[in-house]
Length: 360
Image 1: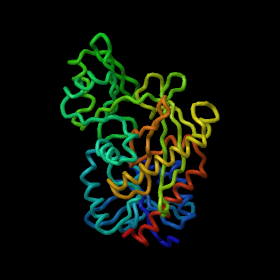
Image 2: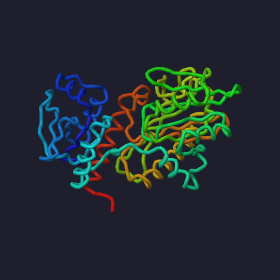
Image 3: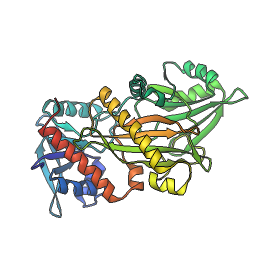
Image 4: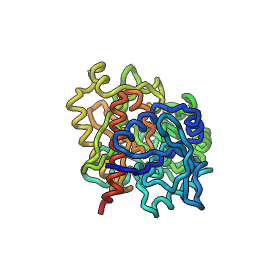
């Protein structure tokens, strides 16, 4: 089907060095297995291998059992599997613009999705606004104090962040002080008066644009919050498909579940009696599919999307956030290699079909 269709996989410089030493991670080995089934060629490269002037990339491809250095024109599709920093943002922006102009297929979004824009997008949809928790943009730090007068617990989140970074839970307590928790290389907590909390918030978020969100009363296991990370993808079919729903059980006292234990929804339902598998998956899949399509209407089509969502103690589903660059850590920890290969086969098939028959 795909012929000599070339997919460029953007990874970190560290992972490129490991490839040269024949150290292949599980994720890349499964992506390679999927490419053999679909018939696409892969070239793995880092930002160091981009030549904007010549419009070429230098990377590594597997030929037989040997990794071979390869210099190639820009690929027909690109899959981003590495985060990027402010230092590399300008180079990548220029690179993505060149790719866009030549018609390269982006398997996933080239840029992170803004959380405030996501909430506005979904809240504007009559069938989805019921899943969006009350959320406010923070223009000044005094906005936070005013909101805490009405809602005694808030989650503060940077609009452009992922993997549990730049999230803080703040609770106003009876003494007039504020209790905060955040995760930054470990759980950090404190009880502060407003002036000191202002300084803590300013230092933690720096210049990031921030939103505040009312706390969701999530279901718990052993006093620890539980949420869900759904992984959806396109394979060229009309609607996105749900490959799996890992369940994440947070650490005690942690405001996030990113650094947590995880298991498949199937195993979770077998181990705990909090939800019934068939009914919950069907309800979640309907909500997730509508959410995926709605976000595409706002941000453009994408081959994959990770969606964090929660279930509260009253049985209501809640949207938490979308992830344009999902590392799939929970999926890898919860599902078999066969499931992951199926996902990657779908993504590569989506890229090839998209290129051969682009949407009108």
